[in-house]
Image (cartoon, rainbow, N blue to C red; front, side, top):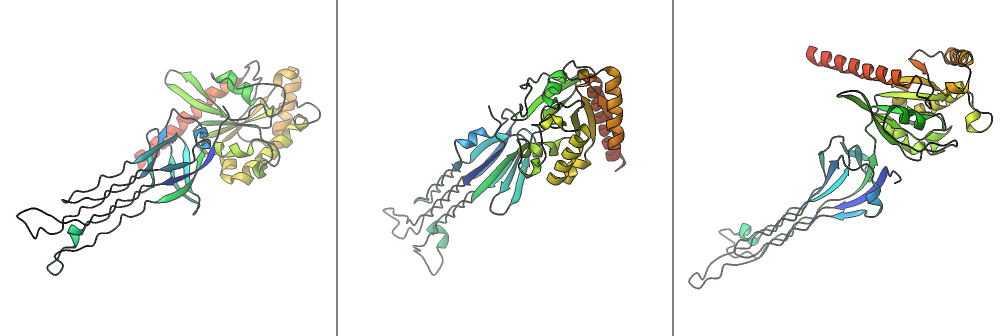
Length: 350
């Protein structure tokens, strides 16, 4: 199934029921007075985060949602029944934006999170509320209020701890297969990955993290080129980025780009999309060392690191043979452990 990570929906809350104009009419009570009841409130529209969903594909088929209207009030001071609320389930990680104002209404990051996106209208007042010493038999009632209507943009951002990024055919899909149970498609042509893949890396019992394979980026991705542009947003929630680079790119085509230029090009796209992405911890993974002799691979890696002036951690691996991949996962887990310790210490000091 193709991942759908953006959708627009129109939500309309229910209108309130109208108030009733009614009078008490009983045989031995000739001046019974007004007894019109209030209308019921309209149903509201809620969004509910569900961890069992992973795409917004359902909103391709249904784009309008309407909650139930409140019932009108009745005589004998009987209130109308309130309309039922409407709950729409969305994947965890959905960001909700009001299209008309471009305001972010909410961010559903936990299973079970609920967000009110359209409030139901209040029910109208019956004529029993308008009785006074001057007006003994009011024939006045108010209509129910209209429910809110909003055009919403739903945007899914994957909740992954680690994001893999790099040019097409850098080996990201092979890497995620090597370190997790994820089984993305792997082939020797660009843009094999057409949607993000998630994998869980279990370092040991009760110590694991989620890794996401983001579709390959190319020059101009932030401006819409290639397939990776629409998925750059998924990197925003990650805690660390693993930047995969083909150490020995083939001549010609996308794969023929020099490794150093591959890194610089991706950095430009990250900064253009969101400068905070470039500020995230980003470790360099020089992949496909198996295509070179050992001494040649070491020399090539040293040249790349020197040319980049790289100061963050870096690794030389062969994802297809899994050589060197597991030490990275253990280092990532240790990095998360240090983050947690620092957060705990900061919370204790405050």
